[in-house]
Length: 266
Image (cartoon, rainbow, N blue to C red; front, side, top):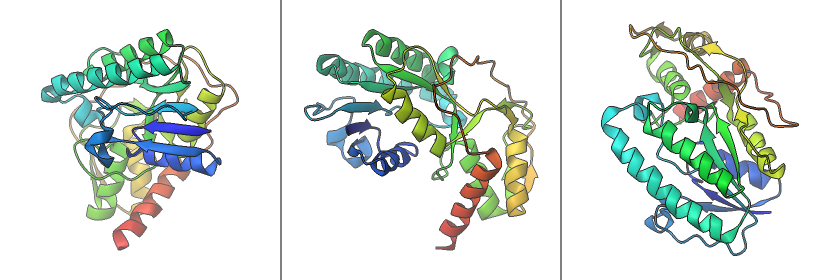
């Protein structure tokens, strides 16, 4: 298989490209981070020898970016333009493709959720495949406004000896390790799934518990915030056949911490 991965340089995209190569498949990376000629909002995609397309690219980040009030219009413009360009070319080529949606597609309080829902509808109209991705952890990210909560906690624990939380941590989330995510995406497109399917651990855990596990492996002090977070009421829509998550939260977090310790030694 020759796979075009749109969004190949993101914190998930890099791992997914490696996964495909480990399966003996070919990867054609495509990402604006590689050069302006690979801006998927405007670029002409060469789909001639491509067997499958994975549509990962999006204006995305952790909650502190997704819910940022003054970033909403920019997110809307970016994601709508991106979809128009990519989806129109997928329609013309009729190549099998997987669109990466989100559990937030059930919610309408952010541009991110609304545009992901639109992407699902567009995918269905083109007879493509989409999955709803829940909270991914595993890869270490650069600590920025776009980074995600687990990576932020690990970074703080290793570099500062403290985990300063934005909330009390009582809110719950479902987290899924990158290794399980990669296998799920590949399986979903292989099966040509139709309908809504979730890629998650299917287990709720408090954000405070995530911080406490990281602290137990690093000796860091957890400092809860005062803001009360909310637990999303997103329903589980469906499970991918012949796929189940295998990496426990304890094991996955320990891997991240070990990687971070090695990285910060250098």
